[in-house]
Length: 119
Ligand code: FES
Image (cartoon, rainbow, N blue to C red; front, top):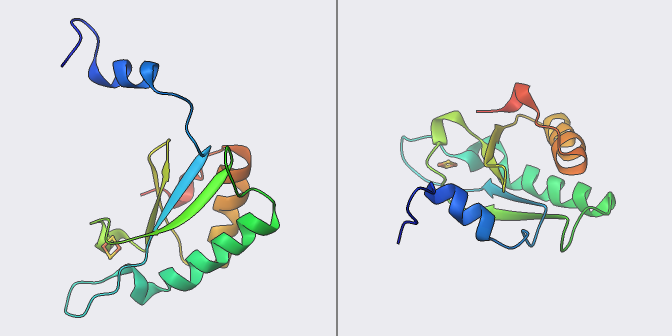
């Protein structure tokens, strides 16, 4: 039920406890047959594995820190491969390990959005 005079998102954010993870990353790894493009055709699973490895190596993983999860189709297939980082709701695309390194180092480690990879 809406609270009079308080926008719903303001109410929710002011009432929510701190996020379990500082950054929760969802990698679309959807594989589909057919004509529509999918993220896994562009190396999503391999680069998700790479991101998880880097997050662990940098000791960023765990409660209060970073979690990398696989996701199904996020319905931005033509813009992908794509990931989304919460709670910031920042969407990225990437091409290779260099892009993943930049997202991990800048966004996940230092909280700085990587503007050049945003979608
Ligand atoms: S297949 Fe990745 S967003 Fe749809």
